[in-house]
Image (tube, rainbow, N blue to C red; front, side, top):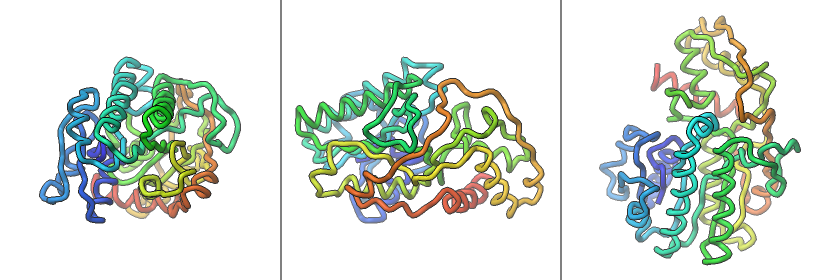
Length: 318
C-alpha cells in the first residue's frame, strides 16, 4: 500500500511493484500528485487507486485494509511552503502520519516504511551526515519530518509495528513536477533552460547537495520492505548517493546534457538571487549504515541520473 502513490516518488514505486506482480493499493488526494502519473495502471487488475486524504482516518483504514507493507510517501514537501503555511504542513505531515501509523497498527500491517527527510539534520554542520547526529530543525517542514521519526520509534517500541524511515536527500527523476511555486530545483531549472529562461540560483551557487536519482530511492524502499535482518528495522537510514554537488556544478551538467537537444541552451545565463530562509548550506550523506545493514548499493550517480532524467523531461515536457 503506497500513500502519495500519484506523486513523483510514489508513482515510480507503484510502477516498480506492479511490474513485479505485486498487488498495489495507491492512496492519494491529488493535491500535489497527478492522476496522469498512474492512469496507465488503472486497467491493471493488481492495481487499486483510492482517492482519499491521510488527514481522514477512515480513508487511511480503508487503504491499509489487507496490506502487508505500507510505503508512506504522502506529505506536503518544501521548506518554503512550510514557512508560508506551517499549519497545513503540520496537519498533513504530522496528523496524517499519525493516522497512517495508527491505521497500520490496527490493521496488522507487518512493516511501515516511510519517507523521512535530510532536513532533519537541521543546523548540524558535521559532514557527512550520519544518522545518529542531528541538529535543531531550521523550518516547520523539518520539525514535521523529525516528529515522524519520533512517532515511528514510539510505535515500534509500544505496539510492535516494524518501522523504517528513509531520510531522502534531494531526490530527482522522471515525473518530478517542474511547475508551481514550490517546484524542486532540477525540474524547474530544466524547464527554464528549455524555454531559454535564466534560472535563479539562491546565493552564490556554492551551496551543495547530495542529489539522489529516484531509482536509488526505489532500491532503498524495496530493501527496507523485505530485509530479514532484525538489526535493520525500527531505525532510520540516509537515502542518497553519498556525494555532493554545488548548484553551480549542477547547472553546468544540466546545460551540457540539454545542449545535446538544443545548442542554444549552452548560452543561457544564470541569475544569482539571495539565499533562501531555512536552507542548509551543505548536505552530504553517509550511506555506510544502509550499506552495512540493508546491502544498499546505489546504481545512479548524479550525472548518470541527470542524463536519463533530462531525456525524460525533453521527451515528455518539451
